[in-house]
Amino acid sequence: MRKFPKMQRQWWWVIAVALVLVLASCVTQIPAAAPESPVVDTPADAPAAEADATTEAGSEVAATDEASSEEAASDEAPVAAVDGAELIGGAALGGDETYKGLPVGFTEEGFPYRGDPDAPIVMVEYSDFGCPFCKRHFVQTEPAVDEAYVRSGEVRVVFHDFPLVSLHPNAPAAHEASLCVAAQGSATQYWNMHAELFRSVEEWQALPDPLPVFARLAAETGVDTAVYEACMASGEYKSVVQERVDAGFARGFQGTPSFQFVREADNAVFELVGAQPYEQFAGVVDSALAGEMPAAPAAEAQPQEQGIPFWATAEGWQPDPDRPGYNMAGDQYRGDINAPVTVIEFSDFQCPFCLRHVTETQPVLDEKYVDSGKVLWVYKHFPLNIHPQAPAAGVAAECAGDQGKFWEMHEALFASVDAWSISDPTPVFESLASEVGLDADAFAACLADPAIAARVESDAAEGAQFVQGTPTFIIVRGAQGSIIPGALPEASFSEVLDEELAAAGVTE
Figure 1: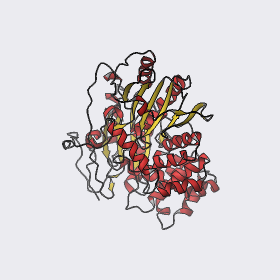
Figure 2: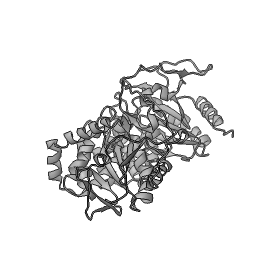
Figure 3: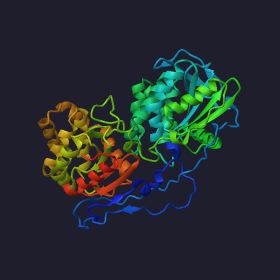
Figure 4: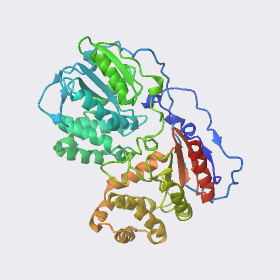
């Protein structure tokens, strides 16, 4: 069991230097000097360490080493010295299919597109289904670009597979799955699969075998599942995906998402790198339509949360309109999403120190900070391997969450941990479900659904580079963050939150 001081605050992007990315993009590994040692900011009056007193540690997890790259800004957007016709994958093959009311189809070389085949501007998107910044673009910027320029017939979007396997090991298979759907000939089915892969990334990205999830998503698009399974088993699109990755690197791209704009009238090509805000896309397109040279993005226009995981960003905290109680990163939350400070809790339902926090500290923090709108509280699962029933308890909580009762089940699980810490906890979970008012049949079916277990596993994988024991709390204020490993007394936790709120300009 690892021993921690009662309070240890760390600048977490220094600890996770592996996640620092240029222009809010996922960047593949490139050779670089070794990062500096983590900087630890421990208050002078921090309490002395107490053995085994505040946190439990599971097995050791080594952080990966990912380097960032730098790009100098210029007065004008880069103009690529390449053939625009080559970039866009040949001519668009017309048809009568649509997706969300937009024309869709494939190019001569098999790249999916959406928009008018005769649009004057073609935007080539180099993207990775496993990249959180690509999902940010999909959720936030893509709908606005589609409405303003694709629907009007001014822009056609061509999607170029660019999974970065060194960062997202399951992403290449996701791209193969999308192409196996496309192989059955329907562009509409492809774009539905495309959307579902982004929406469900938290479910499949950390799985040891994501193929069952992909098969389920493919079936939901309406393709012939036997043909799809045969396509995946053959591996025929593995080389296609790799060829497209190689082409992306050959064109100078190191990260995702990246974009090239081709002006059909004169074959001029312009580039935009990163999950830029809509205004940057509009500026490039408007200038290109006017026959002008688009200006490069201003430095101040870059996304502020550079290198921060999607689940720790304002975008990730936005409510999911399709799943009440969940945010866009797939996590349960309480409080005001516009609160100046956010606490992200990694917890284990079988951990005694997590129980201590829930029973002794959390009620006071809720009253002082969460209920008052000062702090947004986000919950993530981190079951340790020393607690064999903890993953199943996490599944039970998620199943309750699907019926709008996550927090009720959360409290019930902690209150009855001794009762369900047995070889088969399912009957106890079902009894708790009845107590909190859940539909028994739906709950039982949910417990057996491997997709729900994948949510719990995904949380643990996302926290592995930051969390070594439970409970662990990541405090985020703006683009700054710190880590508290352990179940602090209420007074110590409140001191930390008061300090963060004061720094954010909140004094009452």
